[in-house]
Image (tube, rainbow, N blue to C red; front, top):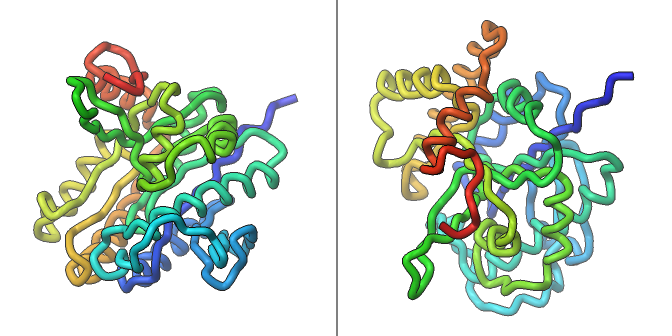
Amino acid sequence: MTLKKPKIIILIGYGEESETFVRSRPLWLKYIEKYDVDFFFNTVAEDLDHESVEEYPNEIRVGVRGLPIQTIGVSSYGKNYIWSESEREKFLHRRIKTFEYLLKKEKNPFWLFGTTVTSSISLMRLRNFLSKFECHGFFGGALNFMDIPYSRNKFVMVSGASTTMSSDIVKLTVERANSYDWNCLDDVWNSIALSDIERIPLMRFDFTDKNIGTNEKNTHQIMGALNSGHFHFRVKSGDALRRQDIDPIIIEKIFNSIEAMEKSEVDLDIYTRWQSWASSFSGRGICLLDPVL
């Protein structure tokens, strides 16, 4: 009997409704409808009690009404893309409750891939890549290196825009939910909570103010990244007004390029290309990084 491969659950972090998100959301739905995959926008619901989680087609809503917020600060992300302290607590609550919900719902091991609504992925390549790993003990993503006070070492943080976990690591995150201070961004908190788990660096191509150019330049960048083996793109062009006009255009262009690539691609060895990139990335000839370097 052939064992069924663990399913992949795509979880899209989605904050306060903004014009950028409104324009990006249908681009995801248009792409993902071609696949048989569990895909959810993960939202905060002010109208639901903080113990409630509701699932709808392509959406998981987590209640925050009555949540005992420990910090102050009004909603700010929709205006300047910077989380207030109270928003941080709400979104970390959303993460933990969503993880609990998925663990109760799924009876078999699964992969969780989390990113933002202003990202794009090749699901075909993501499946290809994860099929090379055992669905156990996996915690990876695009990495950031944070200074540790009074130390020459760096703390290795897994970015929320590409966080990839096997379900046992999702479970471990929930088990440690109350062991750490919640007054930080949810991806920072998750990396701290899993400070004893090795990180697996994953490729991600970022479009930012520093490299966004003309349409022709962007097209060359997308095709170059795809030819290098990338399966995940993140778009974050700048301030709120600039993002709502620019990000959706680039996201749509990326998805169109991904779809064209997927129609013709037979068997590009994404894993081998990643191995080559990750081994040099770590500086130690291996594809795993300690939490503190």
